[in-house]
Image 1 (cartoon, rainbow, N blue to C red):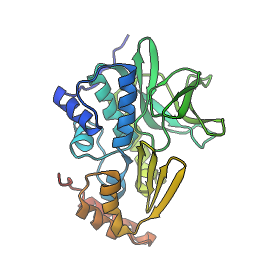
Image 2 (image 1 turned 180 degrees about the horizontal axis):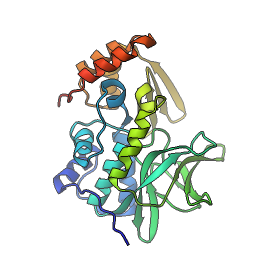
Image 3 (image 1 turned 45 degrees about the horizontal axis):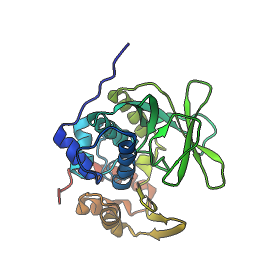
Image 4 (image 1 turned 90 degrees about the vertical axis):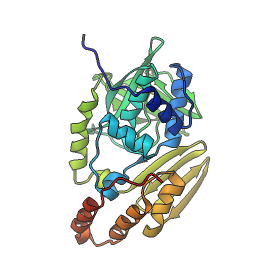
Length: 298
């Protein structure tokens, strides 16, 4: 029987990570704590692709780089980054957890590539799916791997078997139908297993992360979703849509999503991206490569 080992955060790193998501140290490995960690993380750390879309910075999945980016620099990330660091937090807090590989199922009828990761936690003889890095609706709590519907925070999810070795996470919509969210495998993956998957995803010419600017964040009352130049802000049943000029987006990134990117660096790249002429794409990529620098701490 093989053991699965992951990096651990130091006590000081764990304390600062909890502060980043609005919680206090110490916490204890209970289901209530797990739910609080997931909810707080989703409300504090955005799903975003500013590095890949605007700055052309290489993405690293090393634990040190993820900690610096998400905790110290107060940035967000996408699933391989957010769920990667979150797993280290769970391990460091005493949870028995491992990384699992996933396929996005929402909106598709055929099997998709392995482009997502989540975590599975074993607690009191049960297993729970935990996700803080999906670029769309995700469960605001730890979902037990059970076909029985589970409702918390006003949302209902359940997990079923697909019959071919995979598990399927389903989300119950307001009309009562259960829609697929992700397909996942109860097989532990190492942290380094996700690097080739991420590289393959980013190498695809039609990948979301290189072609569109996306920032998503849960709020206690709903969601904030930004794509390219449009912010959709959902509060309960209310929906507000705001379009931004390119020169206003850097301030929006900081003020609406709380992301600590260097404003001048973002503005410089938005001036390049502001052109709609497709032939300028090569020049844009060259400009991004030259401006990939660490953001200021202010």
